[in-house]
Image 1 (spheres, rainbow, N blue to C red):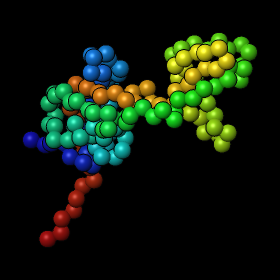
Image 2 (cartoon, rainbow, N blue to C red; image 1 turned 90 degrees about the vertical axis):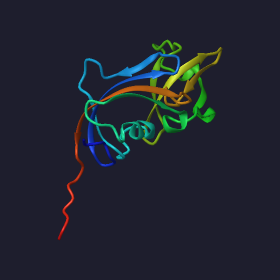
Image 3 (cartoon, rainbow, N blue to C red; image 1 turned 120 degrees about the horizontal axis):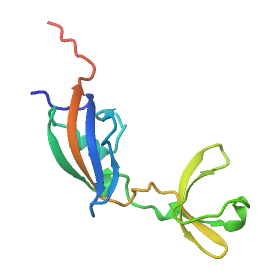
Length: 151
């Protein structure tokens, strides 16, 4: 029975939850997630979780913060003056925005608080600081690069 190893391209159905059971993402009703194991395309804990699985196998994995999106970084939370927002924009907690750093890079941020003169923006990944739980089902394995063994 073929098992997933580093370099394999795999297709996986998943249901991602926080430790309190809140769903944050799922492939239900969509095509399975397709990626190369060990290729840096998914968080390390997800790569590790599918390694060794066989086609049709289902399992639940628990991914600690360090193997997910890392801890929340306080230096990624900033006060932004309200008067720098466009006049026609009404900031609301939870609103997703893109900031530009002046060098043409766009940084996704989320409004986490609104104060008298400033809006508090969080540039951390929304799942930073969270342990994650995934229900996985391995759908397919497409082997990595073929090896040629010379006699």
